[in-house]
Length: 347
Ligand SMILES: NC(=O)c1ccc[n+]([C@@H]2O[C@H](COP(=O)([O-])OP(=O)(O)OC[C@H]3O[C@@H](n4cnc5c(N)ncnc54)[C@H](OP(=O)(O)O)[C@@H]3O)[C@@H](O)[C@H]2O)c1
Image (cartoon, rainbow, N blue to C red; front, side, top):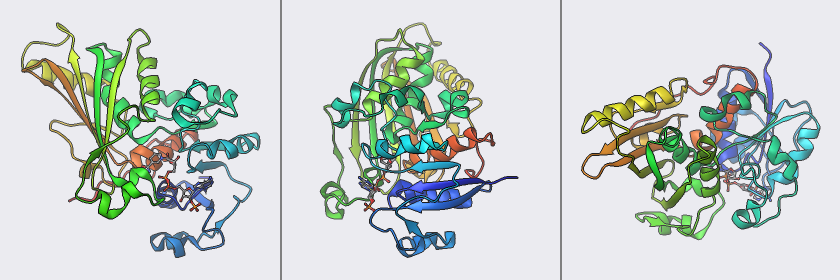
């Protein structure tokens, strides 16, 4: 079977290096070329010994003859390189936020720049396969979702679509430190992050507009009101989101039967989604360590009539590089799970 020739821009970050790990092991991919700004000229195995078997050199430009490029650049930088790749007929999967928001007017507020290619926002497909599988299959540009957004949208999509809840929701998320990337910073410094937990971006985190965009698309009549509070916790990988909303009266059976109905609704909603596991007890971030699953536990607080949905995933896999590979599989008409069937390492 012909191999997909893939390239990675910015292999030296956490998403870039995770992409290299996954693509090297993918049976239908030839990882041909990787770039990195500060490490150009070095062997990938010298920068990351665990990737030595790839036998790739880090260059400052991608080779030609590539079918798909994964851009793992920071936001505002990716948008500078993606248009020229598309003009060459190369498919692009962008890990940054540069093509996630449909409304160009949101970029100055949330990302601090005027979008230079607003026409591409219409063309880009938001790469959440569980919601946009068919559009992804025919796309040339994928806006790979944010890690928090993936966990929150997947947790709430069924109840928003079916209007089981009132539109006032709370998303309380915890992330491991790799969510902040490999670039060193004070908040991710060991002595700051270790044995510490803190909330941040309470006034509005950058992932909020894409969460709203995706949930609104599922139910345009629903006037959403979302409070999203992210937290940094001292672990390397993982996101756990606990979502709360008040259930509408009469939508579910009374008492404990409501829990069973809710579980059934989620199982039905995600019946064709191979990476969603609806669980019968609260999932833990370790269940998703290094794999592409999103675990979701929907339940009802019977005392208050409130919905509680807990979702968890690995921010670098289902929240980033793994989801990007899942999107590539769909774009190249491969089974969605190809190269992504690893289970977690536990404990
Ligand atoms: N971390 C996550 O959990 C996660 C999840 C989903 C999506 N994302 C997104 O994926 C992208 C990469 O994230 P990351 O966590 O891998 O970041 P990262 O580990 O901090 O890596 C970013 C790398 O980008 C390079 N860089 C910085 N500015 C650049 C520029 N202007 N042009 C070219 N290269 C530049 C730096 O490499 P040099 O030192 O070589 O310059 C840096 O190592 C971001 O857009 C992020 O929002 C991250």
